[in-house]
Length: 280
Image (cartoon, rainbow, N blue to C red):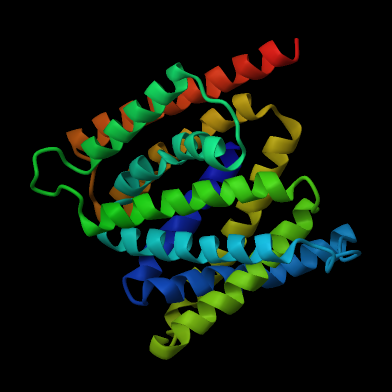
């Protein structure tokens, strides 16, 4: 999980650098296009092309649309915010997943977890600046929209995992996102500079390794034990912000991040206790 988080932090850094020169939807297209050959080769290595057309097409199309919006919103947010600020807001995703599971999966969420979700949302407001000067910035709202798309996508994964192989889910997500985002970006496509090719290669490799690592993490370890390590992204974000852009998060960002992470850890811990009580 730590390797996955590091790889995704490097991937997001490449996206942030690219978003300074290319439209957000084009960055989303480049993310998918660059990783697609590696994903296709991985499926061949795994011998996973058997039955690749026997999938729930409607759910996969929905997930691809959510993925395009998630990447485009996040790329736009990275253009406006530091990595640390973007990660702090995006950390609300686990709370959103818990809340949405009630609506879509009919799961029961008790009062304590609803309170934790509310606390996490308050943490987001703190990151978005309670003094009013930068309240609800367009970049912050974009990242919040990205987190919401991610949360809904996670719900679709739970539903799809009942019938479809994980390799097929990854393949169709990348292929559909590559086609959809490229079509949306085509009218305003900006020609790629030769100097940005190393960034594209980095985007492909880090995204691919990160996806493999996070899949391995959740396969080999309990979700409640593995998930908290995702918050190490904030440390990478702070370090990369300072190394590349000489910026550090302010007090509001750190306070809001602490509130969001605290509520997220509570939800993860509470979920583990809930599962253990159901399956002693």
